[in-house]
Image (cartoon, rainbow, N blue to C red):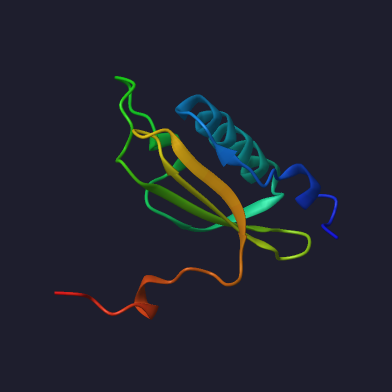
Length: 102
């Protein structure tokens, strides 16, 4: 059972870039309201799309946590290909937990 804040976080797959942009806007609003906190991001939410309408990169990842119950969510998107998802993550992503592959 998810808490009242988590009930507003959709667990979805993105079918196109517009669905991803709508999710970015929803997460941004939840951050502003203090309902979630950002744990990790490959780019700031307001930089996902630049002024020319181009996406930050081919793969974008944001991980955030519910302020009420602590549930961790990952939002991964490949806006150039149109796919992505929001799902519950088991633990916070920390780059230092992964060895560099040279």
